[in-house]
Length: 225
Image (tube, rainbow, N blue to C red; front, side, top):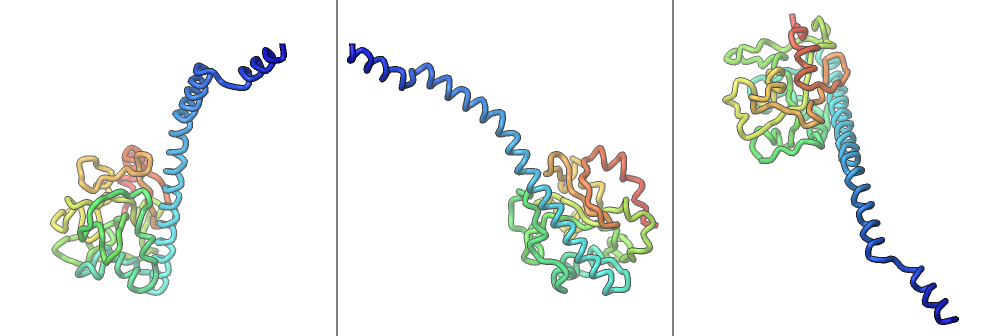
């Protein structure tokens, strides 16, 4: 009788193969349900880091504006060493690591991905002027002369690939015609943040936009004149 009790107790303390398979199946199901949520949470963290980068770049830009009688940095004036990015970096307004969006997975080491020795994930609005008549993009602008700064994008996420060379009218030394970033047919098209991009506006706020939202809320209202 004692032996039977011991044997019965030893069987109840273990798991059958069927029970183990059920446990494994439940764990796999829970993992499949939680993985998308964890992935989304990680992307949200990267997106918030990108927003922080843009706000800090904007803060440095506003310091530049104060020091230069209200003038915003030109998108480009003369060469790679005089882009808005270079001017802000070389004069100590911005730390180089702020140029890199954590969600940017662009591959390559060409000039257009790594400018001034820094991997760069953001593009400057070329409407802020190149100071180069051959590009016909106007002169640099003063911040207080912008009529609708809440509708004017200063800089934004952009896809900087080997296909985007200095010969492209849409992309030159880190500046861009903003609508091209929202055009899937263009090399600079970008949607790395849940199908959209983060945009730093001239009034200081950062906003997420996708193609539909850009064309319904911003396009045509970003009047510089």
